[in-house]
Image 1 (tube, rainbow over the protein chains, first blue to last red):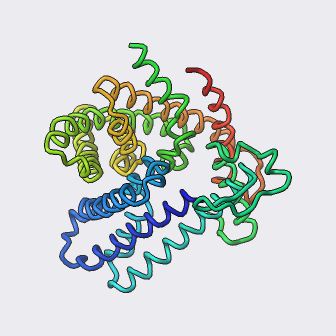
Image 2: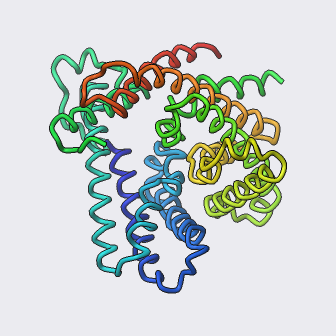
Length: 170
Length: 191
């Protein structure tokens, strides 16, 4: 859970920052070199997040590892810069960034919640133990903590959301 | 020498880029529908990973470290990778047109592949020497290609299978990835 929250905060900051800057300077960016400019702006914000996390939340920085700098190549951020911020006014871009970030955070939190509760039988957020499940607490399903558990949960959730009609078929 | 082999095997099998580290998932699910595309993509990524590793190692060692600007690494690396992909694309186009046509659109897309930026960051944080970095990048690239090919072979058969409607396509591919991941966990005790 901690990692999911930290990651969401990082992505929100980068997405918000890059959307604001790109939207503000969208009229003076030459069309032909726009992608390199977007990437440099995004990389700058990721560097800021990286340094801030390193300085103030070193434990979180350690456990996020290389995934924190890898926000640079997160398709969501470049995708929103290209598809939305480079064509729309500032306030709309801020709203877009916030909406996308909340959706990202929800998805991340659902998966983190399920993986932690099923995989360890208990849930703790920033060192505070919230609850321990009766039977799972003693016999946790360890595969959910391991990498394959993430694929399993994503596949099942995606199928479930399609079945319920939350996500449309391709 | 044993050290290099250990790094290579651990990157290729135990810490496999796709199944264990979740890096390069976009091409993994996007390109793994046909075997021939998967092979081309794997070779292209391995090639770019290798060149990017050598280039960023030199930059890190002889430019970033002497001037004490290591905090600039993310910006520098992504720019280096973007320009390298551009150069590799031009070089392949000039020397081997068949290969260029086979790789097609996948070549420019490698810039935003997290596996490439990932390998340069891993090499930087682990402070590997040049040879160790090369072993690391080749291991990562070959592991990536291996899993991509296995997955595309399975998915070609899976297209014909009669899976439930809500499971078709991506969900069943994710479950397949889970099963592959479970088998790769078995490599954990190797070293």
